[in-house]
Image (cartoon, rainbow, N blue to C red; front, side, top):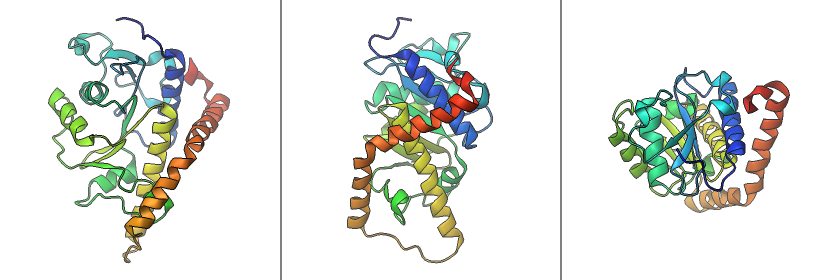
Length: 247
């Protein structure tokens, strides 16, 4: 496989490994399943993904597997990724220009919300409002995504959005960088938790009007620097407590 052309693969490896370790700390992962990926080529088709069935607490930058979304022989390699990782992430990197980074995982609150007939994240505070009109909802779960057709279907369902609630399944966030995709994942799970706590009271939700929800969502977009600062701060914690993630 040719080396990536212009991007800093070493830094992307470090950042993706950090996102994996941090998500493990938050107990968003599921056993040795779930998968994060990041493009390392200008066209987005060459991407890194976590190795098959390695616990997230042990993943290091050097463990990440380099794949080519256009290579039909990927699953015949000795270091082939998980079949569902290949199905979903090869399609995302092949089809969606906004999928420089794709974080697919089953965090408990968001996944529970995805198990409802109505999984819509309603704007009841500023975090839930961040996602107003900015989420795709994929309600056509077809079983564990081991067939390439399922990945194609998921990428079509996402369309031009940067995050998706996957009915009966989990969530995926997309971004231009690991920092942006991970910050979105963090806040998506927070939004789902807040909504669940509100539902648990059994009382009527105080849902924002559309104009206020849109205004609040737009305000989040002016805080882009905070997304990078958040991820940088979390990496500093890893640097102190789990520095081997960079290896």
